[in-house]
Image (cartoon, rainbow, N blue to C red; front, side, top):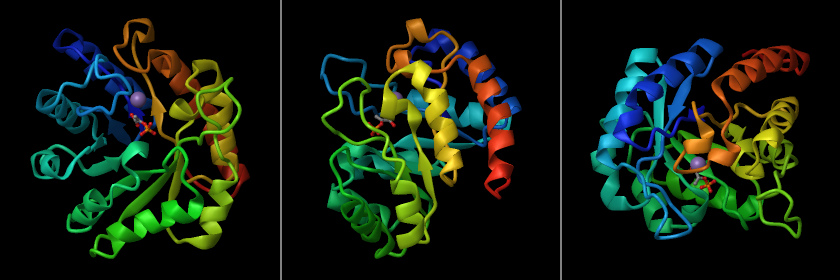
Amino acid sequence: MLESGPCTIESEYQLFETARRVARAGARVLRGGAYKPRTSPYAFQGMGLDGLKLLRAAGDETGMATVSEVMEISQIEGMLPYVDILQVGARNMQNFNLLAALGQVRKPVLLKRGMSATIQEWLLAAEYIMSGGNYDVILCERGIRTFETYTRNTLDISAIPVVHKLSHLPIIGDPSHASGRRNKVIPLARAIVAAGGDGVLIEVHHDPEKALCDGPQSLYPEQFARLMDELRIIVPAVGRTI
Ligand code: PEP
Ligand code: MN
């Protein structure tokens, strides 16, 4: 999975080009944030419906499924034509009304771990979705708040084997939001896969210096392609296929 943040209509061409490059490298799902949970109300808030339309078009052209974050119940219906997977972000992991509403949807939900949530709280959040009858929940470890400030969050690698023990749900890892730093994304992605993670969610941008959101953690497309080549070596070593 990846996020290619075009953020402006002008960079539409680059979005499609980046989508083609990551698809060629082996990405299966294209992620783009249309309604973005920004810490500052003055930061870029996402392209909304226009962004979702671009995401769908790029996903269709490249044969990738699409995923985007849903922030509130009222957005669900309008998003359904454009996304194959609905993401619940870290800040909404315990928005129980949103989780219950997603329990009524028949599309997979990517549930990110809250930045201060225990594994138990996270699994109970997943139960809110499943108890409504939607059993397609994918968990995503995206780093937790600790005393360490060098990285944006601390990737909790141990969550991967713990969740595999406690639950049947797939768990992927997000080294991009966990570290917040491009040069830490690749080693953490290797670790996620080596620990048995079922996937990685990685932000990619054709020109990260100009990205309106999360540029410092976005890989260049060629870095992503190299990482995928490395993962093709690590994955069979832990008895999985890619
Ligand atoms: C995101 O996935 O774009 C995002 C904002 O991440 P998180 O909810 O993990 O902070
Ligand atoms: Mn992001």
